[in-house]
Image (cartoon, rainbow, N blue to C red; front, side, top):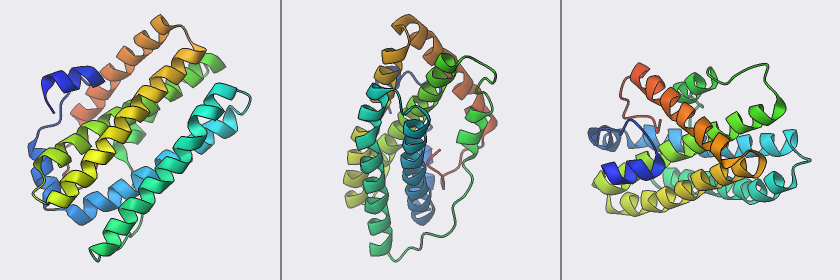
Length: 200
């Protein structure tokens, strides 16, 4: 992803394009990890709807995303079956787990919701960046188009979570929180070794 594209997402540490080369020789692992990422995205949206059921804007915005994310899982699973790949067992997402370790505890509910929405936006933004690399650098032409569609979708989800946060917090506060989480993510990525068999 170019510097300009990264600046749109706000990400501070661009992924080395060579990550896509590693991914290309670990397609089963990448597709497996992607499938579980889509599952977890749907589950996270359901969890937010359950926990904040009284917030009409959130429920309205995230209800179709649950359906979309599960549809994405089905698309990835269909691609795996077509290639003779098995789904296997879900693996821990070290990237997400490290982000969650920075989620503040014992804060007011408004701030708790803001942080949760920022984490969701961040994961979607990073996924968008990684899908962009797969769409640009994979040799498999079908998968390049496959991941281009996912890139567009994740960009939309990233914007949705930011806009949803602005429904419940002042824009200035959302911008400050987003910058804080971008700094956190930069430090998290610095702890992780480049892995071509994971989306994150």
